[in-house]
Image (cartoon, rainbow, N blue to C red; front, side, top):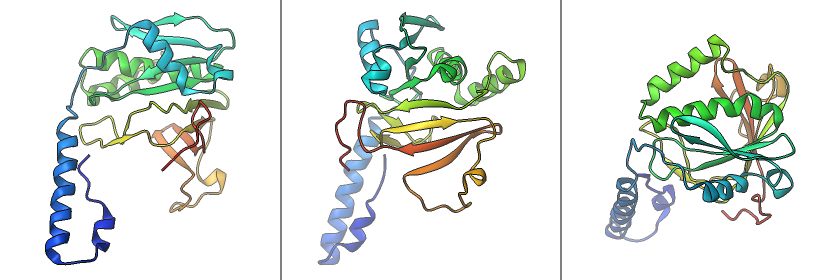
Length: 231
Protein backbone atom coordinates (compact mmCIF):
# COMPACT_ATOMS: atom_id res chain seq x y z
CA UNK A 1 0.00 0.00 0.00
CA UNK A 2 1.60 3.23 -1.14
CA UNK A 3 0.88 5.67 1.65
CA UNK A 4 2.58 8.66 3.19
CA UNK A 5 1.78 8.95 6.88
CA UNK A 6 0.03 12.23 7.62
CA UNK A 7 2.01 12.43 10.84
CA UNK A 8 5.11 13.29 8.79
CA UNK A 9 3.61 16.70 8.16
CA UNK A 10 4.08 17.39 11.87
CA UNK A 11 7.76 16.40 12.01
CA UNK A 12 9.86 19.14 13.54
CA UNK A 13 13.35 19.90 12.31
CA UNK A 14 15.01 20.99 9.11
CA UNK A 15 13.35 20.68 5.68
CA UNK A 16 16.12 18.24 4.77
CA UNK A 17 15.20 15.92 7.64
CA UNK A 18 11.53 16.01 6.67
CA UNK A 19 12.45 15.22 3.06
CA UNK A 20 14.59 12.24 4.12
CA UNK A 21 11.78 10.87 6.27
CA UNK A 22 9.23 11.22 3.49
CA UNK A 23 11.50 9.57 0.90
CA UNK A 24 12.23 6.70 3.27
CA UNK A 25 8.54 6.19 3.98
CA UNK A 26 7.63 6.20 0.28
CA UNK A 27 10.44 3.76 -0.50
CA UNK A 28 9.36 1.32 2.20
CA UNK A 29 5.71 1.60 1.22
CA UNK A 30 6.50 1.16 -2.46
CA UNK A 31 8.56 -1.92 -1.70
CA UNK A 32 5.61 -3.49 0.15
CA UNK A 33 3.23 -2.41 -2.62
CA UNK A 34 5.39 -4.02 -5.31
CA UNK A 35 5.25 -7.35 -3.49
CA UNK A 36 1.47 -7.50 -3.79
CA UNK A 37 0.81 -8.69 -7.35
CA UNK A 38 -2.56 -8.40 -9.08
CA UNK A 39 -4.34 -10.30 -10.37
CA UNK A 40 -3.27 -13.54 -8.72
CA UNK A 41 -5.44 -16.64 -9.03
CA UNK A 42 -6.40 -17.64 -5.46
CA UNK A 43 -5.38 -21.09 -4.28
CA UNK A 44 -6.90 -22.93 -1.33
CA UNK A 45 -4.72 -24.52 1.33
CA UNK A 46 -4.73 -28.27 2.02
CA UNK A 47 -7.99 -29.23 3.72
CA UNK A 48 -6.63 -29.46 7.26
CA UNK A 49 -5.03 -26.00 7.00
CA UNK A 50 -8.06 -24.52 5.27
CA UNK A 51 -10.32 -25.79 8.05
CA UNK A 52 -8.06 -24.44 10.77
CA UNK A 53 -7.93 -21.01 9.11
CA UNK A 54 -11.68 -20.86 8.45
CA UNK A 55 -12.48 -21.65 12.08
CA UNK A 56 -10.54 -18.59 13.29
CA UNK A 57 -13.29 -16.37 11.88
CA UNK A 58 -15.59 -16.74 14.90
CA UNK A 59 -15.33 -17.65 18.60
CA UNK A 60 -15.00 -21.40 19.12
CA UNK A 61 -18.50 -21.58 20.61
CA UNK A 62 -19.73 -20.91 17.07
CA UNK A 63 -16.98 -22.20 14.79
CA UNK A 64 -16.23 -25.49 16.58
CA UNK A 65 -19.61 -26.89 15.50
CA UNK A 66 -19.79 -25.22 12.08
CA UNK A 67 -19.58 -26.70 8.59
CA UNK A 68 -16.48 -25.69 6.62
CA UNK A 69 -16.45 -25.18 2.86
CA UNK A 70 -13.76 -24.69 0.25
CA UNK A 71 -13.53 -24.54 -3.54
CA UNK A 72 -12.26 -27.56 -5.50
CA UNK A 73 -12.21 -27.69 -9.28
CA UNK A 74 -14.50 -24.69 -9.46
CA UNK A 75 -17.15 -26.11 -7.12
CA UNK A 76 -18.03 -25.51 -3.48
CA UNK A 77 -17.20 -28.55 -1.36
CA UNK A 78 -17.97 -29.17 2.31
CA UNK A 79 -14.78 -30.42 3.90
CA UNK A 80 -16.07 -30.59 7.47
CA UNK A 81 -19.55 -31.35 8.73
CA UNK A 82 -20.83 -29.34 11.68
CA UNK A 83 -23.86 -29.53 13.93
CA UNK A 84 -25.16 -26.00 14.61
CA UNK A 85 -26.18 -24.76 11.16
CA UNK A 86 -23.35 -22.25 10.97
CA UNK A 87 -20.74 -22.43 8.21
CA UNK A 88 -17.23 -21.07 7.75
CA UNK A 89 -15.18 -20.39 4.66
CA UNK A 90 -11.96 -18.63 3.66
CA UNK A 91 -12.79 -16.08 0.98
CA UNK A 92 -10.05 -14.62 -1.20
CA UNK A 93 -9.83 -12.01 -3.92
CA UNK A 94 -7.21 -11.63 -6.65
CA UNK A 95 -4.73 -9.70 -4.50
CA UNK A 96 -1.69 -11.74 -3.55
CA UNK A 97 -1.98 -13.08 -0.02
CA UNK A 98 -5.57 -12.03 0.61
CA UNK A 99 -7.38 -14.21 3.17
CA UNK A 100 -10.85 -13.43 4.49
CA UNK A 101 -11.97 -16.10 6.98
CA UNK A 102 -15.74 -15.73 7.49
CA UNK A 103 -18.34 -17.65 9.48
CA UNK A 104 -22.08 -17.32 8.87
CA UNK A 105 -25.16 -18.14 10.88
CA UNK A 106 -27.63 -20.59 9.30
CA UNK A 107 -29.50 -18.00 7.22
CA UNK A 108 -26.24 -16.43 6.09
CA UNK A 109 -24.84 -19.84 5.11
CA UNK A 110 -27.92 -20.43 2.97
CA UNK A 111 -27.73 -17.04 1.24
CA UNK A 112 -24.76 -14.73 1.74
CA UNK A 113 -22.09 -17.43 1.77
CA UNK A 114 -23.32 -18.76 -1.57
CA UNK A 115 -22.37 -15.45 -3.15
CA UNK A 116 -18.89 -15.60 -1.61
CA UNK A 117 -18.44 -19.16 -2.82
CA UNK A 118 -19.45 -18.18 -6.34
CA UNK A 119 -17.14 -15.16 -6.41
CA UNK A 120 -14.11 -17.11 -5.17
CA UNK A 121 -14.77 -20.01 -7.53
CA UNK A 122 -14.82 -17.58 -10.46
CA UNK A 123 -11.59 -15.93 -9.30
CA UNK A 124 -9.96 -19.34 -9.09
CA UNK A 125 -10.94 -19.81 -12.75
CA UNK A 126 -9.20 -16.54 -13.66
CA UNK A 127 -12.41 -14.60 -14.35
CA UNK A 128 -11.96 -10.81 -14.25
CA UNK A 129 -13.59 -8.87 -11.43
CA UNK A 130 -15.86 -6.90 -13.77
CA UNK A 131 -17.19 -10.15 -15.23
CA UNK A 132 -17.70 -11.55 -11.72
CA UNK A 133 -19.92 -8.59 -10.83
CA UNK A 134 -22.03 -9.31 -13.92
CA UNK A 135 -22.24 -13.04 -13.15
CA UNK A 136 -23.34 -12.36 -9.59
CA UNK A 137 -26.03 -9.91 -10.73
CA UNK A 138 -27.38 -12.46 -13.22
CA UNK A 139 -27.38 -15.16 -10.55
CA UNK A 140 -29.58 -12.96 -8.34
CA UNK A 141 -31.89 -12.22 -11.27
CA UNK A 142 -32.16 -15.93 -12.08
CA UNK A 143 -32.81 -16.85 -8.45
CA UNK A 144 -29.78 -19.10 -8.14
CA UNK A 145 -28.53 -16.67 -5.49
CA UNK A 146 -30.89 -15.47 -2.76
CA UNK A 147 -30.72 -12.53 -0.42
CA UNK A 148 -31.44 -13.10 3.28
CA UNK A 149 -35.11 -13.23 4.26
CA UNK A 150 -34.37 -12.40 7.89
CA UNK A 151 -31.57 -10.92 9.96
CA UNK A 152 -28.22 -12.67 9.53
CA UNK A 153 -24.77 -12.29 11.06
CA UNK A 154 -21.40 -12.91 9.46
CA UNK A 155 -18.33 -13.11 11.70
CA UNK A 156 -14.96 -11.75 10.56
CA UNK A 157 -13.02 -11.95 13.80
CA UNK A 158 -9.91 -13.79 12.63
CA UNK A 159 -6.56 -12.35 13.75
CA UNK A 160 -5.19 -13.93 10.56
CA UNK A 161 -7.32 -11.90 8.18
CA UNK A 162 -5.50 -10.08 5.37
CA UNK A 163 -7.98 -7.59 3.95
CA UNK A 164 -7.88 -5.27 0.95
CA UNK A 165 -9.96 -2.14 0.55
CA UNK A 166 -11.41 -3.42 -2.72
CA UNK A 167 -11.25 -6.63 -4.79
CA UNK A 168 -10.35 -4.47 -7.80
CA UNK A 169 -6.84 -3.63 -8.96
CA UNK A 170 -6.84 -0.35 -7.01
CA UNK A 171 -7.55 -2.13 -3.73
CA UNK A 172 -5.10 -1.23 -0.95
CA UNK A 173 -3.77 -3.76 1.53
CA UNK A 174 -5.38 -3.16 4.91
CA UNK A 175 -4.13 -6.31 6.61
CA UNK A 176 -5.73 -7.32 9.90
CA UNK A 177 -8.18 -4.41 10.09
CA UNK A 178 -10.54 -4.98 13.04
CA UNK A 179 -12.51 -7.99 14.22
CA UNK A 180 -16.05 -7.19 13.11
CA UNK A 181 -19.56 -8.41 12.52
CA UNK A 182 -21.47 -7.90 9.27
CA UNK A 183 -25.19 -7.80 9.97
CA UNK A 184 -27.78 -7.94 7.19
CA UNK A 185 -31.55 -7.77 7.23
CA UNK A 186 -34.25 -7.07 4.65
CA UNK A 187 -34.74 -3.32 4.31
CA UNK A 188 -31.71 -2.44 6.44
CA UNK A 189 -30.61 1.16 5.82
CA UNK A 190 -28.54 3.87 7.45
CA UNK A 191 -31.61 6.11 7.64
CA UNK A 192 -33.57 3.41 9.39
CA UNK A 193 -30.85 3.16 12.03
CA UNK A 194 -30.84 6.91 12.54
CA UNK A 195 -27.45 7.46 10.91
CA UNK A 196 -26.81 10.64 8.97
CA UNK A 197 -25.44 10.69 5.43
CA UNK A 198 -22.16 12.08 6.80
CA UNK A 199 -21.93 10.00 9.95
CA UNK A 200 -18.65 10.38 11.86
CA UNK A 201 -19.15 7.25 13.97
CA UNK A 202 -16.06 5.08 13.52
CA UNK A 203 -17.09 1.90 15.33
CA UNK A 204 -20.00 1.00 13.06
CA UNK A 205 -21.33 1.95 9.67
CA UNK A 206 -23.77 0.83 6.99
CA UNK A 207 -22.13 -0.22 3.74
CA UNK A 208 -24.00 -0.74 0.47
CA UNK A 209 -22.99 -4.05 -1.11
CA UNK A 210 -25.22 -3.66 -4.12
CA UNK A 211 -28.49 -1.98 -5.01
CA UNK A 212 -30.51 -4.36 -2.82
CA UNK A 213 -28.19 -5.31 0.01
CA UNK A 214 -26.79 -3.28 2.91
CA UNK A 215 -24.64 -4.45 5.80
CA UNK A 216 -24.19 -2.99 9.25
CA UNK A 217 -20.46 -3.32 10.00
CA UNK A 218 -19.73 -3.38 13.75
CA UNK A 219 -16.15 -3.25 15.04
CA UNK A 220 -15.34 -5.41 18.08
CA UNK A 221 -12.71 -5.04 20.78
CA UNK A 222 -11.22 -8.55 20.63
CA UNK A 223 -10.34 -11.24 18.10
CA UNK A 224 -12.02 -14.64 17.96
CA UNK A 225 -9.45 -16.13 20.31
CA UNK A 226 -10.19 -13.47 22.94
CA UNK A 227 -6.98 -11.51 22.43
CA UNK A 228 -7.49 -7.73 22.54
CA UNK A 229 -7.14 -5.50 19.52
CA UNK A 230 -3.94 -3.48 19.63
CA UNK A 231 -3.78 -0.57 17.23
